[in-house]
Length: 278
Image: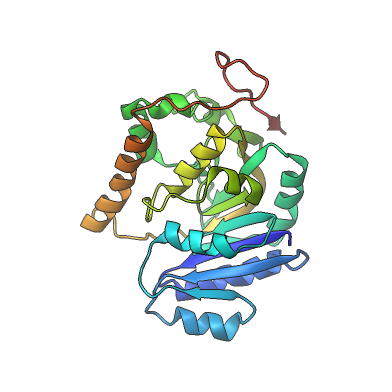
């Protein structure tokens, strides 16, 4: 099987239906499986999936486990050569899947891939290229961990800012809204760290992929639309605990030892090279 598409849902019934319809349309020429994990929703999502998408492999959590653990449950049963983690609040362009899989086939050094992310009004979201938002960028600068994200550089004149919206390039991190993973690489580096229950799991996984010597790619020749459903209200205690808690976990995991990023055939004293396709 070529592809396993994994969507974790928590009380996003209407958005989820839209996401699954567009994913089915995008995968209609691909040998794929659709795995939907319902994370103890209470909004009728399970019944909707059973009625509207009977071909989906539906996994229902008895209690709310969070995105990382729910994704991992699906990954354990996934049979695809590639695994696609997709947010339940996204719309996938009809030609997205047919474009990203050949790119991964041609780039054997690729561990993960992300695409252009647009708002519902068509505005380009910069974290498509960087993989994380300004809060995470500030955190990485503050802790000194920015040195391990050279392709983001985190400055106004940085490499990520010089990458055009429509240029293919190697990047440090892939945003979890749409994250295509090579299953063999995932088997090597390990699944998602379940301590990142809601935020930061994508940054951590992207980082571990680079530590293992593989590349993360920004592929802008197709797109998804992110409807930007906020998992938790900003400035709520739960948001602060999960969002900033993820940063604390990341710092504790990497700050007190120096990660060694493998760059095959290149002395460590040199910076990584970039592949840019126009």
